[in-house]
Length: 154
Image (cartoon, rainbow, N blue to C red; front, top):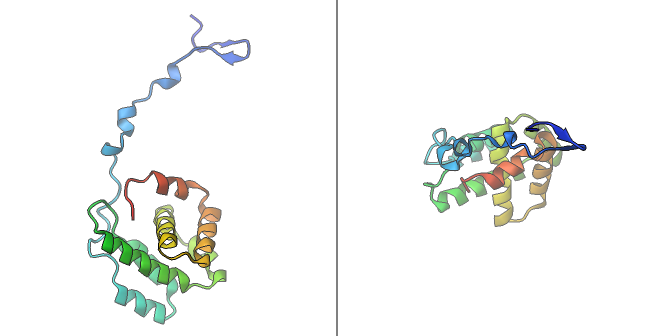
């Protein structure tokens, strides 16, 4: 009959838009990139050397590159990584945060906002709100949504 036709300003009972293979979207079939991170995590000595040399941007990228993610990572390693990232984030001056966030990829921003939330749980710090604000300003709400829907926690 009238499938796909409008009736009195409203769409009819068409179900054509519902023909989506939900199984293709099943989370168990989706693989998040766990392979790119080392299981040993972030090298704190390297990060300290970078921070002492006022190379905060390099320290930030190093932590993001080496943050272990996944379900097989110990909570102790996740906590240690979060504390290291917190130290890195605190090393930036407020006026440097925007440019640091501007140099991130979307994937790095997703990981950073996850670390910001985790760091805020461990030690509430006003500067973390500045990082959060800049990430949202640059990338929108996407990183927030992806953090809350991600299966990998920190």
